[in-house]
Length: 477
Image (cartoon, rainbow, N blue to C red):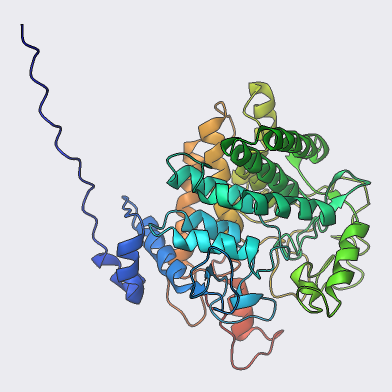
């Protein structure tokens, strides 16, 4: 008998029609670019919708180019596409007003842009170009590998960004170990300021952030090396990843706090040597040591303070303060394993602090320092502080970390989908309902008052009697 006829072709699935017209007031002149380059999104929550399109408007505004004279292999001949943190030039920025601190977040957004030149150029700028890639904690291998997983049919294969940049990613990793590894403490040192967290309550030392980053960097390089067929390199970096996981889980976990925290340590000699070298006029940045390190310790803090201690926390001891970054980073970078289940649940008890009013919970999002701590909101004259305010930088990491926990770990008693949904909606409302001097929402800035819902640094730069600046500064976000 003749074979049965083939089934009729399935009707082509079409995505739902999502109109950007209702968000024209948010997108403004970025609307045409956004419609051409980014994924469409719609939900039942209007704050979430508005925040989504506003974030792409801001992303578009921050696209820039490095000078054409800074020829970087693989970049657009007109200059590398880069992404800035501030719209206006700030004194601590590097070439083309770039700052490496938010680069990991920039990559996480840029990988969704349909034109791959933005993410590709940006990676090449930091790893091959003139970018100050060691000024703040940075995770390029993790970012590039996540990009490859999303856009490449064969992640890490020849022709992919991860394959192209593998030697540069390995070199960057080894350079960080060279300068920031504390041989005595056997962990990675970072100052709170260079961690992007000015006046963090736990100050400097072997921080959970940088050590979790090193786990993610080693893991990504191992995966990229395996995809490139370099089994020896892959095996080496798998061993490196195991080393950093051990540091995070065994040396930075406080049984007293049931939480990850900083191991107080002074800067290693290798970092001091690097700073000294960059102060020389024949250094890569011609005497500008801020390209590798900004400040140590507490910034603009009064003498005689009790918390954090004026002379720093006791060296070699775990700091008895919980911080949001130490909750987000271990899961954001995958340093906490999903198995065995009992161990996963032990570490996940830390997430109980997310919705504890004495911990991080507040009406406008999770605080950066637990409310019960004596160090919460400690007095100083700095513009920016990570001692209590809500920072969208870290809230976005916490949301991603919680998603990682929910998707890859056994069910947890202290964190569920409702906690993630509440966190995301609060994050969206910070964009759409918080108050900013001289500007109607939506808006996003550096740090947000956890109870009163105004952007703290913007208010300081506009009306604070402690910072008599005229005319008021608007850095632009």
